[in-house]
Length: 223
Image 1 (cartoon, rainbow, N blue to C red):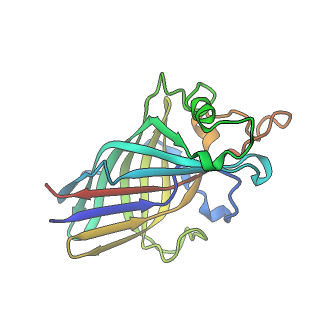
Image 2 (image 1 turned 180 degrees about the vertical axis):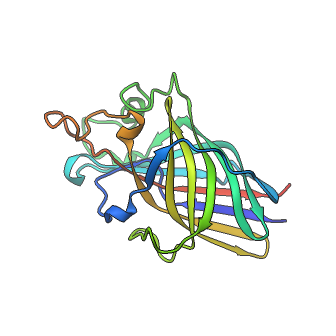
């Protein structure tokens, strides 16, 4: 039985990230989804998770937690990743209480704020989605300080709220026997999707970096 582990450690990291500019995912307009050729692997939603971490201005008061993935598939063709998509359940957004150290603040209050219209507006947009549009060999043209030895560039449409943009980032993919692994770590600008709350664009209100470090751990297996 072929299994897939697609790891991009730590999603929606609203952080003042210390990586180089090459760690920023290339962002363009929405593209056509890649045809899912070869074997289709269904995500194991129990083993799949999204981790996130966020900081305030200057890297202060970091917060972290997790979000679940509700469904998805990934395709492998001739021992190469060929396509895939998955849906993220934003209503499941969880803030780890260990990340909220101020006596007058609660992790549940922060989770509620992140789900509010200031950020993800979960009542109106309960899910986010990522759809792979292109997988190509990594040539070193877009190096990363966050990821060691990437061998693929993955492009995909990321939908947050009512906006869809295409992002491209380095990934490390390894296929050994029935196991497939892929890792990636990169940064996006949350304001590109209209998530502007307390971002740098308004200096008098700037409290939270607009940089977003994205990561994910997906697991799937062939039926």
